[in-house]
Length: 232
Ligand SMILES: N[C@@H](CCC(=O)N[C@@H](CS)C(=O)NCC(=O)O)C(=O)O
Image (cartoon, rainbow, N blue to C red; front, side, top):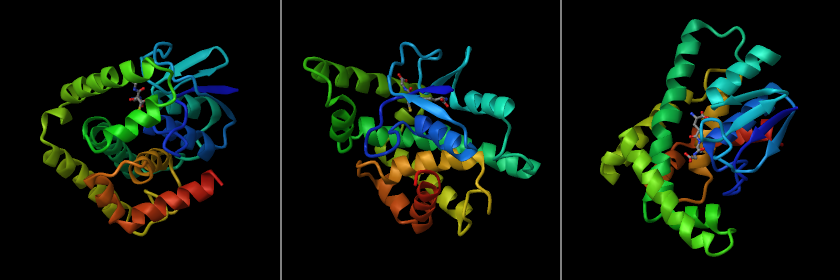
């Protein structure tokens, strides 16, 4: 059985970590049996980030490498037969979601004063005192440093919203009226797109980015379609 180490669900989503939700999406889409271990323990994670998996004696970290491993080990029902051009598009959109839009959304949750109380409550509210008071500012400081290291955190709030807004428009324009990102068939790119879009649209964190996504009705319809198909 594939054991997935991840954060516990929050925000009413399968996971408030888009990377954890992406992996669960993929496993459901590929029809693979799995067990979720909601230990939230980054200290045990091979790369210090979640999710990671154990499968028999094999340990794999990072969703990209995990999905590559799953494809090699159990077959590739989602992406087999894709054209080289679609593979290139999938790679480009995956990077947009995971390396760019992700950090703009992290900003709305962890750095924006409007979103921070919701994030603090969702992730730390159940901890006993004094951890409930000690951990949130430490975690927020860590995220601020990571955002500066990435580069996104060096921009003004308006610039971050403009950068993330362009990503959202690109996703909505590319999806257009197709059922899935690359056409009639759901591909592994949809595991990522659904995870990151649902985390933007459905987490209870108001922000200009969320408004921008809400203004594009096809994104909401797409997330509802993915939810109905894979989480019914
Ligand atoms: N490239 C990694 C990214 C995973 C990632 O960034 N996970 C975040 C949660 S969304 C995490 O574990 N953060 C905890 C930390 O950095 O301490 C993947 O694809 O799995």
